[in-house]
Amino acid sequence: MVPKALCLHAGIRLFFFKFPLKPGLNKKLASLPRMKKKINIITLGCSKNLFDSEQLAAQLAQQYRVEHESRDAAPYVVINTCGFIHDAKEESINTILEYVEAKKRGQVEKLVVTGCLSQRYMDELKREIPEVDAWFGNHHLKEETAFFGLPFREDLLLDRKMATPAHYAYLKISEGCDRSCSFCAIPAIRGRHVSRPMEEIITEAGRLAAKGVKELILIAQDLTYYGLDIYGKRRLGDLLKKLTKVDGIEWIRLHYMYPTGFPEEVIDIMAEEPKIVNYLDMPLQHIDSEILASMRRGISGEKTKALLQRIRRKLPDAALRTTFIVGYPGETEEKFRKLLDFVSEMQFDRVGAFTYSHEENTAAYTLEDNVPEEVKQERLQRLMDLQYDISLRKNQEKIGRRMKVLIDRYDGEKYLGRTQYDSPEVDNEVIICTDKILTPGKFIEAEITGADAYDLWAKPVRG
Image (cartoon, rainbow, N blue to C red; front, side, top):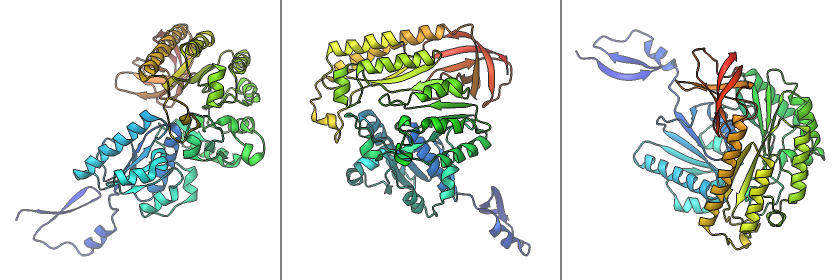
């Protein structure tokens, strides 16, 4: 008699023969664990979205097999969207439609959308894309968990299922924003600024360190605002001092430092504490004072320069990352050239830039979007060409230096790592070709042997 396939249990194929099963075998088979259904979480946008996805993944992992950005087929898909500017919204919509088509082909059973785009355009999206099974905004973690038939567990909020490599993690210290930048819809999407209690952050940092995390990347809409709402004053400096005492953490990196009201004691702490890397991410957006006033940035071009000069005096070795908007309403060629001169003068280590996006429900939406798109793109290219030359020169100056490098991964031909001056995904990588076996998550000393504008080449000295 030809065996007949009956079922799968824990990867073992069982067959019926003409002989009866042994007594009690059915009971044993019923007690074997069932294969968990898979959920694939697709995260778009910034690292704050990634943090949210990791919290959701921890809740869903109670019953499901959860993967981040998996290329394999999954019956359930959650898309965590970005709704900040036009390009990000377009990417989110295209990703949703891609998975709608997969659902029509029978490759996806349930499609769930969450995050900033659905928070911002919930009603319109529901009407336009009815194939999506459920829509959630930014603060609906309990509802998302319940949709998948699971109880919400508070204890899992501090035990995220990480999407990053095991040796670094993003640590969100606050949510929302109280700033009123004219071009930005984030306060309307994310809500008012809410700081996390310091004790909670320190507890989470300790748990991350226990899992092998070596680098903490602090994120928020504005790190400098930390503590104002719950402690009555800015407490970022106090938080940093406590984080440096967490055993196992070797690097602490600061992202998203707003220049207005910048707590300059943080610079003194950075200079004193070796665990806090010499790296500052401070989005400046522009340097022309009239543009800054229209942007509602709360700081002039002159005060911006003075702040940067003080930072450079106290932290001469610090890498400064910033972001600029080109093509904002009223940006003339003269004002744009002032921005180019500023970038040339300040010699930033890292620069990101994007063209102005005319966003509804922002203060700038009442202004005439009077810089043509082709001019915006041309200015963007000129700015990035200038920064290319600056980045190339700065990198070439590192040739011959010995630097501490954190190994991130091995790609089959070479190792990729970072120095303290580089954040993952957005900055330089150190490329190491060697016969030595290096371990991701470990630090080595490396000698820089070559450079281009965006990467360094190195050889290990010891590791």
